[in-house]
Length: 258
Ligand SMILES: [Zn+2]
Ligand SMILES: [Zn+2]
Image 1: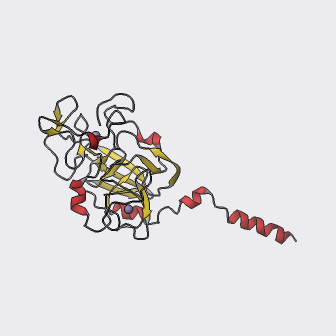
Image 2: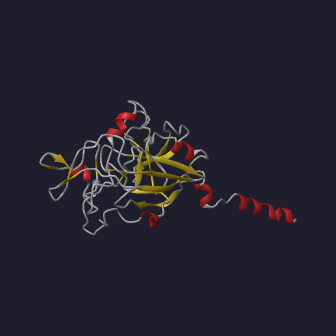
Image 3: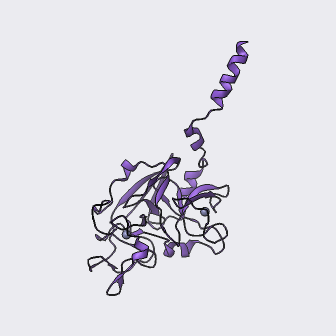
């Protein structure tokens, strides 16, 4: 009667997937190819090698930027080039617990610019809600974007209208406008009906169909209401790889506005 004894055990083992097995199903096998085929700017270097997407650029977006941006100290700064190269996993895995996004780059936009979380250098001031101008020169432009005080790291704190106005269609779900460092894609503010999504989680993400993933996939939305950008990574992300914010304005460090 050994067979009867062992069969249930074998079934139990086979039918008891680890968390990792479940998570491997988070995205399809062609996920990386689909993300790599998004509308990345012509001057960006987009390389898919296995499950790693490398995105490199000089950080100057392929859309118009202002000649100057206002800074907290009353001075102004123009957009300057710098070099970045980000390795992003194309086999993203939902984490057991979200990870707060940090100051500094949290993702890459199809323009060549990067995404920052909603906050300025103090970690609490919401950039989009605290715009100001220096003699008519705005802190954030109409694309919810600006560079660091150094001029580099041109970044978006909310819906990048200068991108979404070009790629999104009225009445339809937004299209991919970038990817966060955890590997999940970033979209503009439109759900499948073209309206704002109503079921976003604390990380501004949800599972559902998009133009590129009609069978549904977890993805983020930038939103026209708070938090505007992404407060947390829903996917597993190696915070050790993220480094500190460029410009040295660490959380709680009273650094420059980012
Ligand atoms: Zn969606
Ligand atoms: Zn900023």
